Amino acid sequence: MMVVLGFLGLLVLGVPVAFVLAMTAIIYVVVSGNFVLMDSYPQQFMGGLENYGLLAMPLFILVGELMNEGGIARRLMSMSMAMIGSMKGGLAYVNLISNMMMASILGSTVAQITIMTRMAVPEMERAGYKKDAAVALTAAGGLLAPIIPPSMLFVIFGVIAQISIGDLFIAGIVPGLLLGCAFLALIGWMARRHDFPSNDGLTLTERFVAVREGLAAGLVPFIIVGSILGGLATPTEAAALACVGAILIGRFVYKEFFFDSFWPALQRTARNSAMVLMMIAAAQVFGWVITFENIPMITAQWIQSISQSPTVFILLVMALLLVIGMVLDPIPALILVVPVLLPVAVDVYNINPYHFGVIVCLTLVMGLLTPPVGSALFTASALSGVKAERIAILLAPYLGVMLLVLLLLAIVPALVTFMI
Image (tube, rainbow, N blue to C red; front, side, top):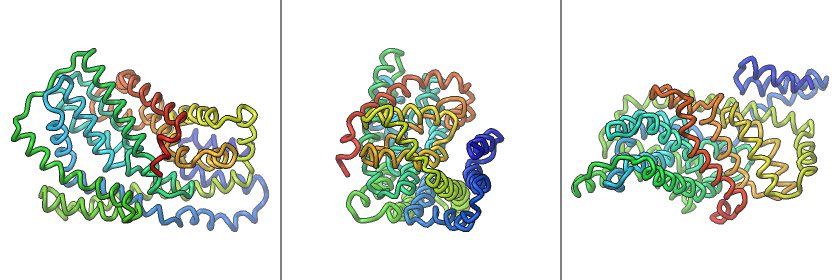
């Protein structure tokens, strides 16, 4: 009980989650009086970082930084517009398709919403869209970032679960496309219902130029996914190849990447990576404590008393994660719940770990756009000037569609696992 109170107390006081996890383990050792465990504490802490798969994470963050510096986002938007044409609600479709392309590069919801809000919302306003609707659509597109490879959440889940990150990327392809198509269908319905404006027509030459320039940008996600699917590279190696590709394309094709911007990009990558790695190391210690306390088995017995059905278990987990996601960001939430729930899912209910990982990551990311925490929601609000409450209301249809897709994935696991 003292351990639980200490954990909750530190969270309430606003202590960073990584330090909460590390200090909770120390509280447990002190309360239990088993000070021999302190000898293993440094080993457990560093052991959380001794994983080859973690090398992929800073490299994927660097890919996003390099692509942003190289002028990729604008060309992706132009290519999407050329592909859509002058149909009703065309810019709404362009926004979402560009979000899907950016998701295949950045893998971070907040980073994606930051870029797309600055780029897409002014364009949609000039075309006659209401600003709040444009911001809501842009924020909803950010939900695709954690599911379309590469994904930071997938990298972290793969490290914690000790499963192949490459296979996890592959498992996310169909759910990501399914979610994207569901959003496109929703936009089509909304375009007719709310009479969205049409695009200004582009000439054939303008479309050709936009598509031609955008093809080079598409090479980076192709390198990542293609090399993994083809068995030519691990996710870490694929991320390194993508970094080289982003530099070459930005410097010699678009001529917008300059080497004096490389050092600041490395600094931002190092800061972001350090924050995540600290949480992973602390999570290893936290997981060690809860395993020592037999918490996974206690959780399994409680859930088994409710139902023996794997589907019911998945639905219960989704309900729990929706609540957790409302108050915690996905990465610390993932670090907290996976050590407890994954052994129950795999050992007790015989659920495929890749299926479980996709469900967990998708469910948690919904919390980024829901109050009271919702870091992506407040990022979109701060960048656009639209009240967060208004954005949250307009996001309801998108979150509803995402929930329907999640239910479909929970009931039909083959949609996630058939490509593995």
